[in-house]
Length: 441
Image 1 (cartoon, rainbow, N blue to C red):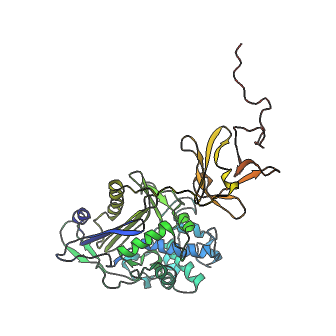
Image 2 (cartoon, helix red, strand yellow):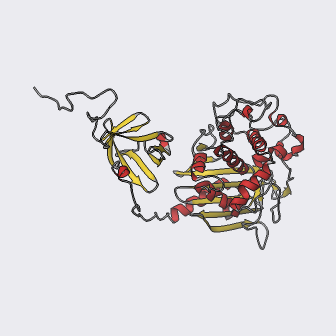
Image 3 (tube, rainbow, N blue to C red):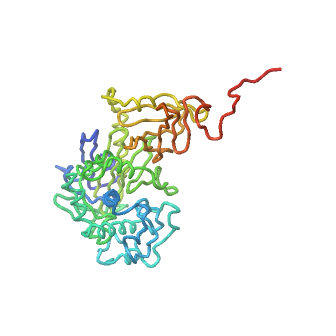
């Protein structure tokens, strides 16, 4: 962090590391002698705001008030972008422009863009809808308008009531609340600086308005990794972290989920978001697998690589103090009809193993990587894939009249106890002469 502040020539940098849901380290580096900012000092977080907006949209989806496949026009009339779906807006695949028409929106008051038409302009599209990833700030303005329409209240009020208060994010707000850092522009060729102006972004607020602290963002990272049923379930935040769009060429390694950036650093999968507004830089990243998260904030327009800082903090802790695995414990109970599914299965001649775990079952190849997934039990006795090739697909055990298991059906694929089991309904049938060797003359 000291290197980031020094080499980045930042008035201040503040950071925090989370491990297994708790803040385990906080630090600051500042150009001011004496006490520097701490984890309770607000900085503007820019586009990390988009993740908060996405959480509100996913709440509407979970309540059945909208579907991610809904065209915008189903809920908002006369936008000029009505064919774009809610999901495409979340994933930045709408084809909308990256910025608003007119003056630089981050340095001009939101009153200059009082209507959605002012944000979108007469030619809102830059690419065909749904064809490629293209980051769009106006797209999240549309999502904020959607939240306001369906909730009948201002975006910030809905956010405070439905997300900030339940999660205890008392230091996250639309306007700065003391103590708050001032934003600065540092001269690129001289060690001098000037204050940056702070604008109320108006309709663009859902794309970048918020102020927050490292401590609040640390709690938010834990929520994005684990879920909280008061806001969104673990299943829904997992859906937000799943890739929904590939990265833009030459941009970053990873991709984009639903309001969540995805990163690949040093062979490690990370999720989170970066943010910037004149005077401020921000980054939040977390690793679900390693139970780690890091937040880094700076109060200058450019200079310190806060994204590199945050990912480095995760890497340093993960490499220096690898996470202890959870102790193995036997299940308290298991249904016989589930237990009998455990063991080897064959898709054609490819061997797979099915394991019964505390939170469901896992099916994966016995050799190599291949197609593997965990599955969640459903009330009707079937199982739903949670990721990979089989994500969302249904697995069911097909039983004979006497109750014994004939085979597994997974999205029409038949898994049998023996390779090409003649007693199972293998599609295409099985040669009646069965297996044979090469007959020598």
